[in-house]
Image (tube, rainbow, N blue to C red; front, side, top):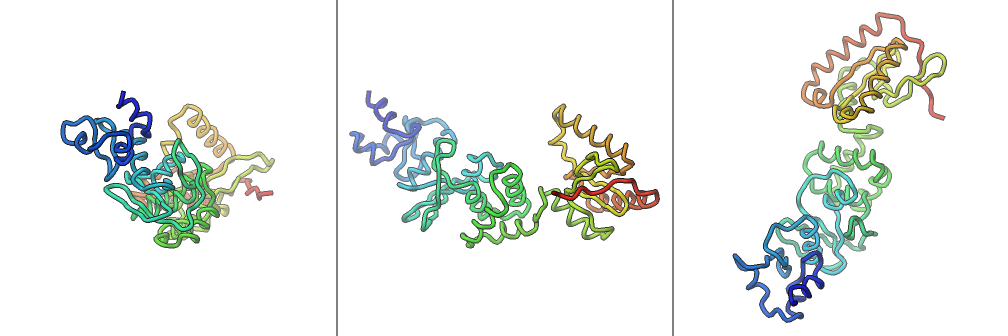
Length: 304
């Protein structure tokens, strides 16, 4: 009966030692010794079984360790918001004294940011979570991938991320640099493409503009468009073409390019990253081939 009562008072089987003592368990740590039925998660925090804890139990334990008013931020909050953040640490914000341990990062915040229940736990907004996650990163590519995913999936806007970075400037140089570099770029691959385009100095391409034929029918929205010669550059990731519908859309797009007489260079993000010189040669040759023939009768559709 006691164990059932303890589980009822716990959070997913996680409970504080002080609560255990108040319920009549005089020495909970004895049960956490090797071979015992429980285990110690953090100082003062116990898991009421001795098997591997679930991720939810790890999060519950971290919040209990951090104390009243603690909320998730950083990589764990990003994942709760549906974003692909890296890192196994659990980062929490607290209104009072910060006490961390192991893979738990605690940080005092004054004032505490707004938060809400996200996937069963108190968590900050996606924008604050992304900024705090980037503060723990050292890789510009990892930060760019997270920021781009947050914007593409509609969890954040560039403005909301920039506002969070301005509000919390400590350690936000990386995310501010990423936001500046991305500009209107939509992915790490597009950032790399912009860098390569500037370096080879063909012509200044237009990015993510809509192209239409002479009758006004929409052809496509290439990643980069060299308007002087009518050359399209598509950064096509395999990840977006595994589905039948995605594959069909890509074929239909390429057919519209062909019908309009538009040359297309298709580049995989991995090749752009690993073999930029080869991609540069392909672009130069394609640009020369496009320039050697009459420009197709197509135009950029100006946004209304």
